[in-house]
Amino acid sequence: MGCKFTNIAPTPHQITSECVNFVDRSIIESAIIINSELINKSMYIASQKHKENISEYLLYMWQIEDLIRANGLDIDKIKANIIDKFNLDPAREKEMVEWYESLIDMMRRENIEKSGHLQLNKNVIIQLTDLHLALLKDPRFPEYTAEFYKTLPYIVELRAKGGDNPDGEIETCFNALYGMLMLRLQSKDITPETQAAIRQISRFIAVLTKDYHLDREDKLFPPEEQ
Image (tube, rainbow, N blue to C red; front, side):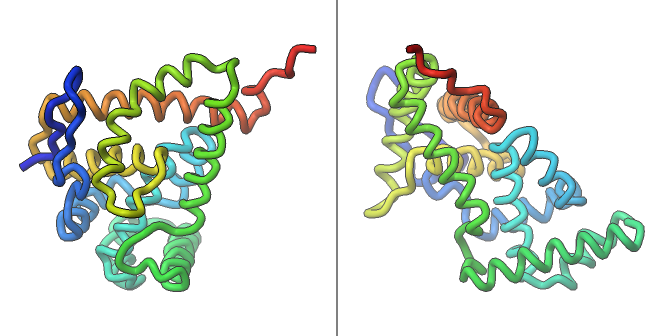
């Protein structure tokens, strides 16, 4: 069964448990292994995405976390299953191995061997959340506010399924996008209703991403009128 949103607007949004859990650990791991060729040379792609598209960077790094878990946090397995297949020159191979080793070390020190996200990735969520709240409070950004409120019903329903300590609004959106990515990697059926919901979440995150990069260039918030 694919991830499914039911009773999409105008009736209240109801999201099935499959969409909250998205995919179990075995599916995530097999999807990441299938996709390993796409995420080779990871550190170079991560650096580029961090500069160009912070949201793609975050989803990419979540994939890297699960790739590491799929290989048992074992650098020898990562080297054999991924790095060695692409015949990197010795200098780049050494750099790549050290990058994965540093991530493995951080995952162990932060006790996220089985699940969860690295603090460096949590920091991205914090930065995006801070910007999100600033944009909502600022009357100069009505388009952003409008896009958020179009997305809010989906966020509310997803968070309602999150138990006593649901993730924040922005992380909930990324959880939805990552879950959809995993379903697509597994060629799972995706209902039209779910696709419509993910399109709206994607539109909202795209606006936030654009504003994030403008803010990093000090081009987002114009001086207050005197």
